[in-house]
Length: 326
Ligand code: COA
Image 1 (tube, rainbow, N blue to C red):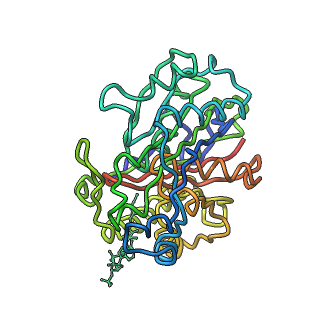
Image 2 (image 1 turned 90 degrees about the vertical axis):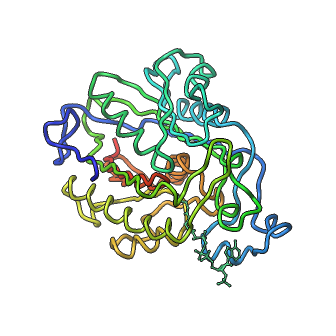
């Protein structure tokens, strides 16, 4: 069963107005320079650019870099966009499924690179991780914190077999970061959220320690469409919103056909959807903040905009959050 917000939680109620607000004050992104195109893959794999684009919407993905390095680059860009000094950050939350080391977590290295020694931890909820992080940040802000970095960063090339036709076409590296601030004006709000998991489906998408990603693509596709629909609906219902109230949807960038199939059932339009998948591939926890960065750079979000984030991934996990922009 999904964890649900309740009206007696310290966050905003389902009606969406709390005593304090939440502001996504600055967003930044980082992609490593090395590009692996679909045509590159055809050199060693029985595939084609046409097939990959048609079945996934992906044209290329990025390789190289380190998770801490990409996370730090994205975080610096987010801090600059927010006009926030690193020393004002009170917590670093790094959503990643591909940490630099098994031990320790990667977030402390990112904090150190930023020159700060605040709390720093990794959050592993696969491709839903950044949305989980946003909800955790909202809880910390309810406890009195003012500025938190919520980062999604991945180097999936270390876990991907680029000779495998199922997974090698999908995954790439990247990072996105957001400075999440307490908004005393209460204009910005996390209006609602929905977090869920189903551990029955561990083995449809997983990796052993030091292994490569194993995936039942068809089953992942089927489950993803179902959980996205359920989770997005739950978040809208809790916020008292309908499809028409949502100005922009920023979904996890896994496969354009998963998004299209879910949207058909939800009644969402692709025109209101931010997609960067064609140029990034699936970057797991980084994909939503990467797409958010693109949306902001293209002026698609204004003060007062209502933005729905929806993630899903290995676990399975899923996560939706609706933010009213400050
Ligand atoms: N290039 C060309 N042909 C390919 C191929 C590739 N990379 N991969 C599979 N095929 C072929 C198969 O051989 C098969 O051919 P056949 O019909 O002649 O036997 C056909 O395409 C269908 O194979 P199938 O494995 O059923 O493909 P699919 O339509 O399920 O597409 C995925 C494969 C991986 C693109 C798709 O299952 C998918 O995207 N699933 C979701 C994965 C995902 O998003 N994971 C991350 C979630 S966070």
